[in-house]
Image (cartoon, rainbow, N blue to C red; front, top):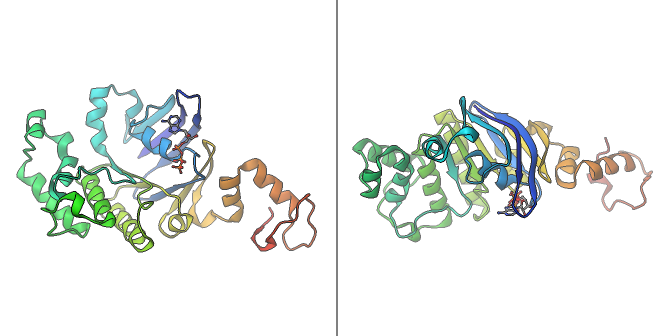
Length: 277
Ligand SMILES: Nc1ncnc2c1ncn2[C@@H]1O[C@H](COP(=O)(O)OP(=O)(O)OP(=O)(O)O)[C@@H](O)[C@H]1O
């Protein structure tokens, strides 16, 4: 179980990217984090495994407080957190298998890591996972010979071979075409179910979040303004996430559903999209 308590991040520039976010993610749920550009979605995900250092707050994974670990301990703990990136973060000149096995680096000695000397069971696990992600037989291809969708599958395989307790995916579909995006979302949901781990996905495309996620976290200007089942994500909730509480409140009170009366100063352009409160 991932417990995040009062997570705050202020960058050295003074930007407050997270204002104090608390939530819990558990079981094998698929949680999608949505929100406008700059809302703090990437910062949130990166603070969980401390690729970005939080300014305040606690992150606890299965009872281990990640935010209390020193850098050596964090290096070990990071293998429990699988990370999938928007731009895949593969080593282009290495093969698919080498990229996948790099997910096991946290488990082998420095000497073995240096020589890329992995135990046979790690290699077998990598083969199995490559089958799962649909890349069976491609292990000797170089990463730079792959399509975007195939690269993302390698990125997912590398995260899964870590045997993580949670999978974090930062905009995993942003660089992919619509069909490939669906395939990647399906793969992430299958992995959550098969491995019984939760998956937290930052995602721009709300329709993909609605189709695949069990639960939505909505961020607006660093504040968690929505946390609930996907079925509760109505137009009002989207308004709060994308326009902020103040503006959403204004729209709710100004535009009355089912009425021709508009009490605000400006005419809405499309009354059918306004739900009132
Ligand atoms: N390294 C950084 N230094 C300074 N400010 C940053 C840094 N990274 C992000 N920010 C700022 O923090 C805020 C949140 O950024 P973040 O990238 O987390 O948002 P996001 O919701 O992921 O946006 P997008 O959907 O566009 O990727 C923004 O105001 C951004 O400018």
